[in-house]
Length: 161
Image (cartoon, rainbow, N blue to C red; front, side, top):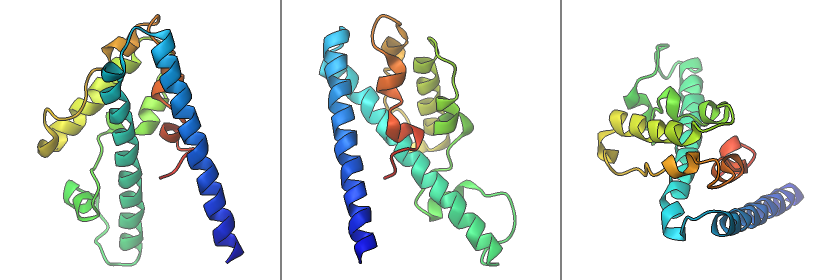
C-alpha cells in the first residue's frame, strides 16, 4: 500500500511541476512575443493533442505485440483497424513525438507541426480541417523560444499521462 502512496505522491509532484512549467511558458509567451493568449492557445492545445495521440498509439503498439505473442492476433503488420479497436490512432511517422523531438534546432519546427497535423487529418477523416495549424509564427526566431515552449517535458516522454 505504501508503494501506491509513494507513486501517487510522485504523480502529484509531476503534475505540480508540469503546471509550474506551463505557467512559466505562458508567462514567457506573454512577455517575450507579440502573440496574444488567443494566438497561442490552439497551437499549445495541438501539442497536447499530439502527445496524447502518441501515448495512445504507443499503448496500442504494445497491446498489439502482446496479442500477437499470445496468439490472439495473427502475426502481421498492424493496420488502422487494429489501432482503432484499441481506441488509438495509427499515427503517421511525421506525427510521432520522436520525429518532432529529433528535428534540428531552427526555423522548421512550425512547418513540421503543420505537416504532423495535416498527416493525421489525411489519415483520419473525422479530424479533417479540425486540428490546429497555426504554427508558422513559432518559426520566427524573434517570436518565442520554440523548443522550450512547444516541445515541453510531456512531449519528450518525461511526463506520462
